[in-house]
Image (cartoon, rainbow, N blue to C red; front, side, top):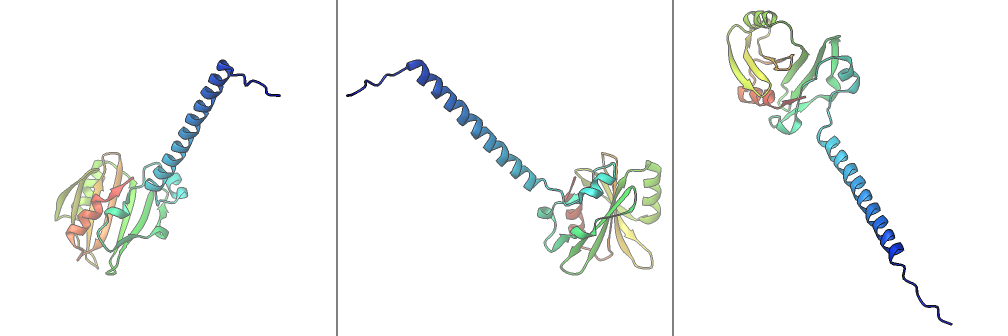
Length: 178
């Protein structure tokens, strides 16, 4: 005995809508998860979370993809020597070591005093975050210093060997991001 197949237009149409809605929702969730994963991989900060949370300013760090060839950020070097100062190092394959400090920007008079005493002979270098002053520091061991007060109230100081390649130092300053 054969039963005729009944076709209920309203029920089938409703099921098709539900299936389509479910598929769109599932595709949206998969896209969102994939986008979030890509964002996290491309925007993952090397600054340890405990250090970033301990300060009230963004910690600038060099983008590894934009550093000069042979330079690496020492991930284990991040420290807080004072509650309002973050310090870390960059190392080069040639053995050069650069110390970078990041802190809240003090009054302009403090920065001007530092620049005039620590780097009296200096030149300017424009970065996307502000105007850096680069010059030689004569101490027991001559060094190169870059002083960069940023537009968002952060002061970055880079201390490098006296013989650092100036183009590489400028590239390091240009590689900074927050």
